[in-house]
Amino acid sequence: MRPRAVRKLDPRMPRSGQPGPDPGVQSAAMAIYLDHAATTPLRREALDAMLPFLTEDFGNASSAHGFGRRARAALDDAHQQLAARIGAEAREVVFTSGGTEALNLGLKGAAWAGKARGHRIVTSSVEHHAVGHTLRYLEKFGFEIVELPVDRYGRVDPDHVDKAITDKTILVSIMLANNEIGTIQPIAEIGRRVHAHRGVLFAVDAVQAAAHLELDVEALGVDLLALSAHKFEGPKGVGALYLRHGTHIVVQQQGGSQERHRRGGTENVAGAVGMATAYDLASAERPETGRRLRRLRERLQKAVLAVDGTELTGHPKERLPNHLSVIARDTDGNALTMSLDLEGIAASVGSACTTGSTEVSHVLTAMGYPEEEARGALRLSLGRTTTDADIDEAVLTVPRVVASMRTGQVAVAGDPLGQGALV
Ligand SMILES: Cc1ncc(COP(=O)(O)O)c(C=O)c1O
Image (tube, rainbow, N blue to C red):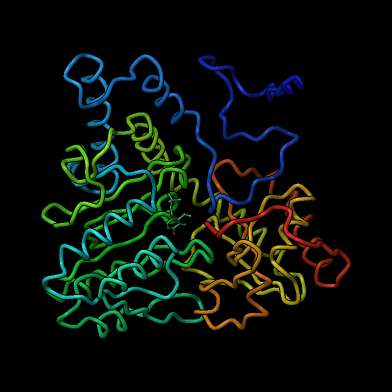
C-alpha cells in the first residue's frame, strides 16, 4: 500500500480552537481570487459562531433536553438575527440548504398553492438557472411561463411586467442582481406594479445581491425572497427563504414539522448560525465595503477596458459595486480564464460550460449579443477580502492576458479546469 500523502498545512491557518487570521485571508502563494460572485471564503467570525454547534452543543433542535434546548435557542436567534436585517419577522424566515432550494421551495410552493386561481407565471429572460429551470419544470405541469425581454444592459422594464400580468397570473419572479453581468433590476418599482394586481405574488432571487445591497422586504415589496450564505462569507449549503406572513405555499420537502412545518428535516443549526452571523456583519459593513470595492472595481474596469476590442457588459451604473463583466471580442472566455488562472488570477466566464459542449450565456444572448461575441465573456468579481495589492496586480495582469489572447499569442486547448455551469 502506498503511504498516504501528508498534506502540508498553511502556516497562516490556525489549528482548530486557536486564534488566528481570518480564514478568508489568502496565503501569499495563493492566486488572487476575483470570483466572489461564484462563492466567497468563510469569514472567521462566522466560523467561530458555528464551531460550538459542530462540537459540544451538537444537540438536535427538536430534542427536549438541555442539548436540544441550546440548539433550539441558537436556531431561534439565527431566525431573529437574519429577519431583523431584512426588515422581516423571525417566523417569516425558513432556513434551507442554499439559494437553489429556497427558490425551489418558494416558486414551486407558490405555484402549486395558486394553481386553483391561475397558471400564469411571469419572469425575465436573464434569471439564474435556479429560477429558470425550476419554472421550466413547472411548465410540464400546465403552468404557462412568460419570459420578459431585457434591454442591452440586462434590465427588465416595469411596464412590461405590468402588461404581462393577466387575471390568470399568480406569480412574478425577477432577480434583484444578475450573477453574470451584475445589473441591478428596478425591483421596488416592479414590486409596486405587481401588487397593483390583487393576489399576484412577487418572488425575488436576492442571492447575488445580498452581500452588496441593503435588503428591506417592505421597501422592495416582495412576498418571497431567496438568500444564500456562501455569497456573503457564510458557509456553503445554507440558505433562506423569506416568506411574507400569510403567504401560502405547498411544502416541497415532507418530513418532520421543522421550520414551522415548511421544510421537513433536522435543522442545520451551525449553518443557520453561521449564515445569520455573516449576514449581520455584511449588513453592518456594507456601506464602507461597497465604497471600497466600487473604487477598486473602477480601477480594474478602466485598465481592462483600455484593451482594444473590449466592452463592458451589464449596466454601467446600476450594477453591483464588486462586479466587473466584459466581452473581449475574438477571444474565448474559457481559454481566457484558463490563461488568467495560469497567471495566478481566479476569474470566470460569462457563459455556462456543460460537459463536452460550450453553451453560450442565455443572459448575454437575451441582451442581444451575437453568439461569437458572447463567447468572449469574462467576469471579475471582488469581495471584502480583496485588497488594493490584489487589484494592483490584476491591473497589470488582466489587460496583458486579454490583449495577448486577442492577438492570438496565447493558445490554450481543451478545458483542464472542467468548469461547470456558471454560478
Ligand atoms: C443569482 C443566483 N441565484 C441562485 C443561486 C443558487 O444559489 P446556491 O448556490 O446557494 O444554490 C446563485 C448561485 O450562484 C445565483 O448566483
